[in-house]
Image 1 (tube, rainbow, N blue to C red):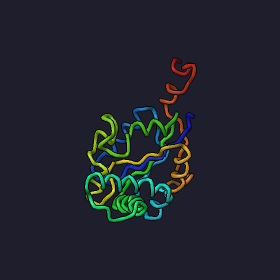
Image 2: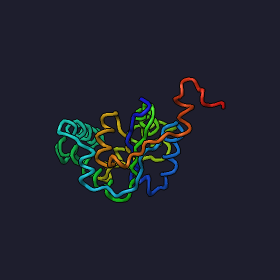
Image 3: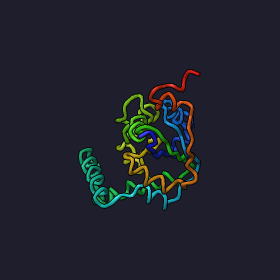
Image 4: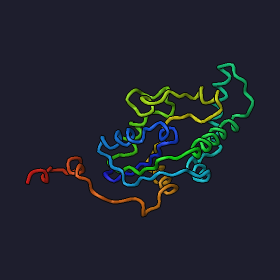
Length: 197
């Protein structure tokens, strides 16, 4: 558990709004450590591989959009499947619009800790105290009305297996650095016998 890896991307809006330092600081303050980090402009191929959705997912998300549009009295011009696929298409367009910061984060239950720090996908409904809840106000409804992806600053893995899959898309094995930080003694040393000389 101490070596669980999570995957994080600070998205183009996070980079452009100068939140790189704030986001890294929030992650590091928990005791998690960064074992890989780089800035890049994603390719469309990386993004489609990263989001890795199937027709079941597209249909589920598209049905929510159809229901939301119907409830708001907005016109429904596509099938649920088409609306679902459009979500990823918009995300790819957004993610390839500018530089992102890509990170591998390591530590005890890092996936769950990072997910808690980041907040829910929709900033409007993210809790105060989370990255998305504190620093952006976007919503699914506004993004849909504007015909774009939700701008929610950051991506993080939902599960350890997902993190492993995502890391392989973005980071080469040799880019992940194995090292020990001083704070790990306090976090993981059972007896704390290395504190006093």
